Length: 374
Image (cartoon, rainbow, N blue to C red; front, side, top):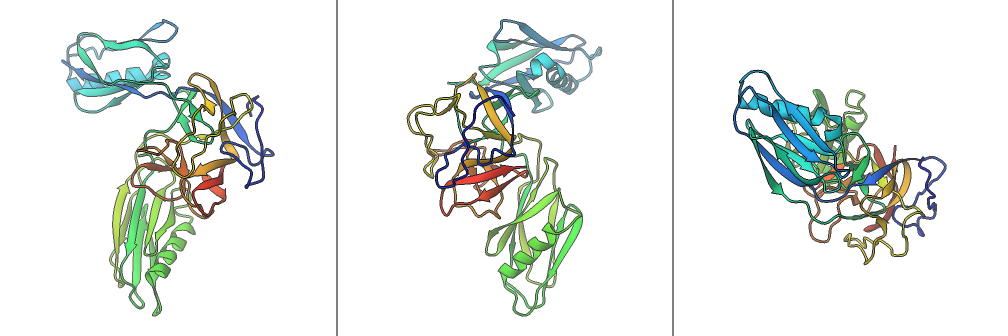
């Protein structure tokens, strides 16, 4: 637990986003708010000579930091790309401030935040860096939002921006058929539901969900949830790719859609806690559309944040919440939407699942609910 005074409330009708719901059992960490828009550099490797390839930046303390790679042979351009990406990400003083990602045989990107560097990123003459996206104004982080790490060593926190971390498939059950079989294969394990004469698409859906969720073979790997009367989703519980298929049975079949097969991405680590050490004079009221009232009710950029990583906390949900539903956090925000906001239903590919969280108090409409991180 961090040494910050917190606000606690176990009255669901009197809560406010970011308040602890139960102070008897919670864990929190302290992170610096590094939430400003990423600046993105696209770096093109020009040649594959036997020379040093280097990238240089200056940190806010004025220190010049450099990553260098030299394979010792002329090689091929892609080897130089791989070497530079590894050199940047494996250099601790750099990886805590920027992240390199290979994007092609001759290119990679470097992401950085305004709070982490001063000036521009440069390379030697063997590579050409282009500022693809410039960082703009810093942004405070309101209370009660989902947070991800802002650097590779866990010193800072930011609002999420990458929804492609966990696998998600949806399947629509066809028209019910008497005594038909419906087959779903999850991570190599086959689940077969056999319907009777009075079967409906909803009972078939519920039967498949029950089989998947009761299986020890996929426990901790995947979980199934209701989407609609004739539709269910299978989601991955880790960042590893997940394979889900449906097979023809004697019933009327299923139509499977791959929303995301799974890829390494950001992971929601916790929720920004409301503390008495920060200004609380103006409420942050999502009001169902996630629009902040004038004023800052949260953590300014550069300040120390208290982030709940285990325990129960009040959050504003964009949707009604049934405690049996999954927990999602917004990673892509359009007009009237807030990065880091919680909800219980999917919204295209703009969300990421939080597999280590559950709802413990719901809400009949968009509004205040309680989520528990486990």
